[in-house]
Image 1 (cartoon, rainbow, N blue to C red):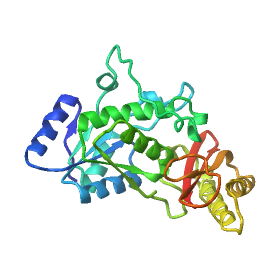
Image 2 (image 1 turned 60 degrees about the vertical axis):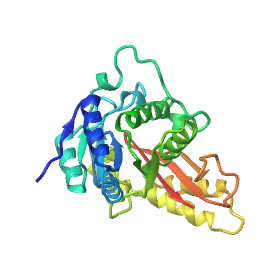
Image 3 (image 1 turned 90 degrees about the vertical axis):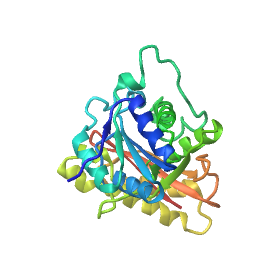
Amino acid sequence: MKNVPLVRGKAGLARRVKLWRARGLSVGFVPTMGALHDGHAALVRRAARECDRVIVSVFVNPLQFGPNEDFGRYPRALPADRRLVAAAGAAAVYAPSPAEMYPEGFRTHVEVEGLSDLYCGAYRPGHFRGVATVVLKLFNQVRPDRAYFGEKDFQQVVVLERMVRDLDVPVKIVRVPTVREADGLARSSRNAYLSREERAAAPALRAALEAGVQAARAPGAAPARAAAAVRRALSRTPLRLQYAAVADALTLEPARDLRGPRRLLAAAYLGRTRLIDNVPL
């Protein structure tokens, strides 16, 4: 099976992108933390359809992990990642070291105020600050025309859209629908943590969200009714709900009603593994 070039430093990356630009080629970008799966492959395939060249970054970003989170055990599988993205149409993999991304003396961070502390951010302080910081750095290094993000991490997508608008970053962010297993579980690198029994129970999160969708369709329904339906559905499962909420799908603000585009978001623990998912209302 073919592989793709592996670029370790930002200087080598800049040379490669400069050559493409000199030929008038467009550049798509898929930022990842590695341990890639079919959801990531879908991002790369979409980017390859819409751009002449696609770069995939693989970097487990320490800034977006809390002190008691899974940075140390987060799965790392660079050789398999390279094969997967090559088959999906990538032209290069950029895998910088932590020292390359955050050299000694690094002090600057990016935070999208008012959105980063909602939903997942309320339970993972500093997470979206780390995400925004690393993504802006990657945008400055890659200089893509378009960047592709999966809707499974819906809050992340909207936070980054806001960052791009507010800071005049010349990148178009493209939302790509969530890729799911046959039983409805959203594809995630952290699914590898699940035991056999936990994996069998995990689709209950998607089923609970669908219960929320049905509740939202009732005449006169309000956002609280949809969130309550998720809580009731999960109360009969091994999952421990962390939150369920309805957000404006464009601004991420908590929804006061169900008029206009809305997103039902939820996070839950299954054993030690934190799962997130969302569906449109």
